[in-house]
Length: 268
Image (cartoon, rainbow, N blue to C red; front, side):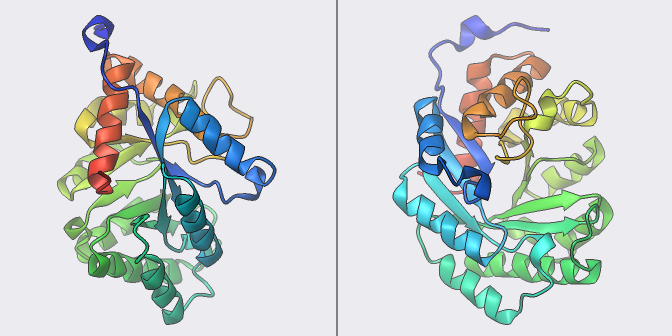
């Protein structure tokens, strides 16, 4: 493994947690304090992703309160069973806020199947087209649905706006297709797990200029804090593991992933 740490000294240490859920009830007692802890630790950008209408409202509220927080609005596949055209109209209104930088998280989840798969596919397609109308990138949730999600991405022309597959769980081959369709790959705490293999192979393959990092907090806490509530300040451990896998320095990963996220979400 090549050690480039000396050549990287002095580069930006600002980190971008590209996917968080501070509207979650597990932050009820210390939500604002947790956000401030992250900022003070060097996480200078956080994107809070919605899963339904109420979390979209809360995401926007947090983004208005904290300069370094941004919002994505969308309906998670778990929650599509009871939505309608009026829900999309609400998302359209929410997206007019200048702190809303993406539509998400949206996608398919065939692991839990909390909503009928036909409805998941229908509303994923509809939300992709909403993103195209708004000219906003999408944040994609994909679990055990690789074939269908790629078919919809291609059929609906999602490459027009691009986006990111968050907490990536697919193969190197799927990552190659996503890169060809103008998507980024986001890596979370799973890359630090001892039994991680597929995501390690993906990190080796994907160019540094197409990677994002995230926590998905309060979920998927990285080592060495696995089992505890996740927070954005732990995104550092994801960046450190990527640096180790790629044989480069932490500063290079931090700087590039931050610039990648700012470019994708048109921040600054």
